[in-house]
Image 1 (tube, one colour):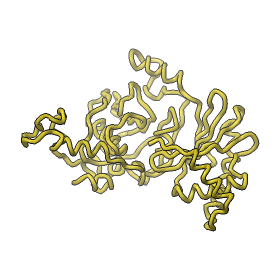
Image 2 (cartoon, helix red, strand yellow):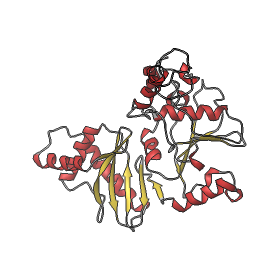
Image 3 (cartoon, one colour):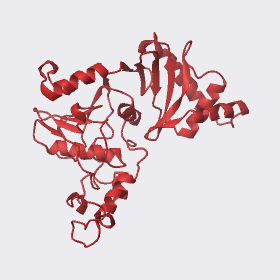
Image 4 (cartoon, one colour):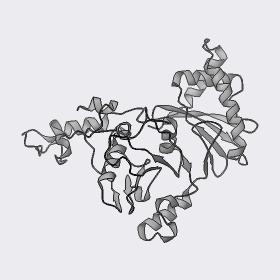
Length: 323
């Protein structure tokens, strides 16, 4: 099946192509497939296309897409149980999504056969979902007690949307550190123990709010922040926030400040600065109240006023894109 269908998640089994078995060589060298053409004009062309074709919303179609984006980009240490789709081999296997794994492994199969998938790992193609699905497939096929190491660019095949039960909610557990890497953190030794110690020392205190979806509080050295991944279409969301900002209703209370937003995996992430003493519990009600104001503003379809348009332009000037 072609790459177009693979991006849309229209199949449930990996399609094998020549790029799965043809070694990668220099672009000007003869293609190892024996075609007589240079690699860059033969199988190298397909590999380059797969690497450069960017899927802007790789987690679209998965339950709780906003939390997938947050765990990929914002949250240091968190896990969530995943449910494999019914048609996948070994569908009852325990699979856990983790923000990161030791030594930046894409995946790990523990001694007991359970599988961990690292979300914040380097990906080699333009489709994060395809890369993660490839790591998951390799982990499911690995021997117990085996890490999955970074591999070459995967050929066309299933995406996460093909391998997972897309109706299963993503129940996120945020951790203070990375002890979830091993079944007994105190017994860890060698490179894993050293990596665990470094990671725990660098972990930023983070909490997921319970009053609203996909909003994460974090504590930095000088101030705290709230970063909230939102599912609304970007243009409509910018209009809604601009209305609130123009009305001086975009903050989360005294001492807080709406500072702008960034775009991650096709979704907009508004950000607020919070006073250093403002805890995650303190921001629950202000965030819920803002959610009510935002819903009302999203329902307003009247043209923006001059003041609101000016506020919107200011928001755009402060917006960045992570990917």
